[in-house]
Length: 289
Image 1 (tube, rainbow, N blue to C red):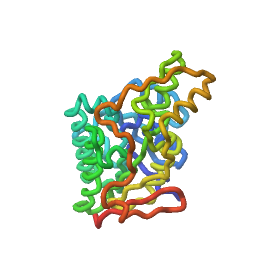
Image 2: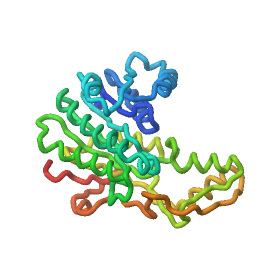
Image 3: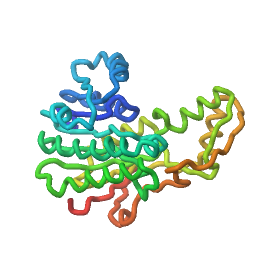
Image 4: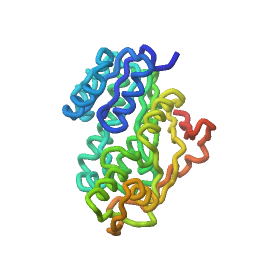
C-alpha cells in the first residue's frame, strides 16, 4: 500500500510544469483527493480537460501562497503537501526582487504555518540547485525557503518537512530546451550566454517521479537530490539542431545578472551529511531537526 493510497494531497503550483506532472503521477496511486492550488485559472481549465476522467478525485483551488487565510482553508483535512509554487525565472526575480521574496520566502512560511495548523503529516518543498551558494535573487530566496522548511522541524510536533532539489528541468515552461527549439524554428540565431556554461538536467517525467519518491523516503529536514547529468549548454543546443534537421547561427550574449557559469548540487557542509543510494539519489540528512 503506497503512502498516497486514500490520502488527501495538496499540490501548490499544481498547474505548472512540475506541479502538473506530480498531479498526474499521484492520480495513479489511488488518492482520496488531489487539490490543485494555483493562481492560473486558464491553466486549471486546460488541466481539468486533460484529467476529465479523474474529476471525481481532483479539486481545483484558485489561490496564491501569499494569502495565508486562503492556504489555511485549502489545507484543511490535507495529509501531504507538495509545495511547487514559486517564482523561478532568474532575470524576472533579479528585476522584481521584492516579489520573489513575497512568493518564495513568505509564501513558504505561509505553507509551513498552514501545515502546522492543519496537522498535515508531511510537506515537501520543490527546490533548485540555484539555492546552493546562490548569486541570484531567485537562488537566494530558494535557499531561504529550504532553510525555513528544514528548520520548521525543530518545533513541529507531528508534521515533517523536507526538500527535493533539482537542476534544470528540461522541457518545463521557460526553460532552455523549449527556448532553443523556438529559436531554431524561427531560423535562428540561437542565443547562448556562455558556450562553457554547464547545467545539471532532469526531464519533467523524471522530476515528477523523484518528487513522489522524495515524499516517501525523506525524513525530517532531509534534502533529496536525484542523480542528474551535467551537460554543456552547447551540447544541448547541438542535439536540438540535429533533432530539428536545421543548422542555425549561435550568438554569444554574455552571462546575465544572477547567472553562474556552473551550478552546484551540494552546499558547504552538506556532503558530510550526504548518503548516496543505488536507486539513483542522494539524501542530505537533516541536522537533528
